[in-house]
Length: 229
Image (tube, rainbow, N blue to C red; front, side, top):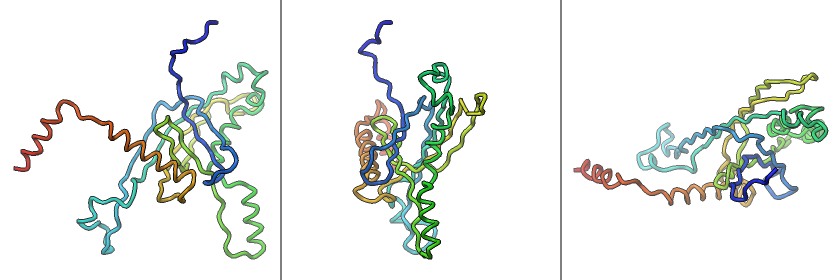
């Protein structure tokens, strides 16, 4: 079989990179999407400055100010299919025995505190400790190309298991992931997530600086100028 042309562009895959904590430690776990989602839905909401007078509405001087970066959410759907692995059972024994359970579980565990930490909390409470720190979840980076490497917190996980093997292991599934982007307001300084978010925002600023208006720019500005007269 002839090799692929060397000029063919490399097709990047989206992924989640999971760090055990916000500070450098063991190598992160990388969850590469089997198929890139066909659609990514994002929502940005302005972070308003709190009213100085205690009212619900910002004052006039604060109306066009922002308390920080907007609250951003990202929603996407990923598809998992074990058909290719099951077609070559000798080299994919884990999939033959477990179907998609390993992949589904690694995604679901992003919402679970580790059982070891749960047991530590129970032991501390049993010894009469009044203040017991909740379990920490891992730090997750959504990687969607070079311009979007962004710290996120998984807020919702919805899975539709569509096909099963003879042992009722899921072998095809669609997963809806809802994520909240974590900004420098929520993350500690000099951590992996904090630095990643600043880089993410800088990338946006760099792309915005490249924008050039089309041929209608002069006409629009003239209209604005005339509207003030």
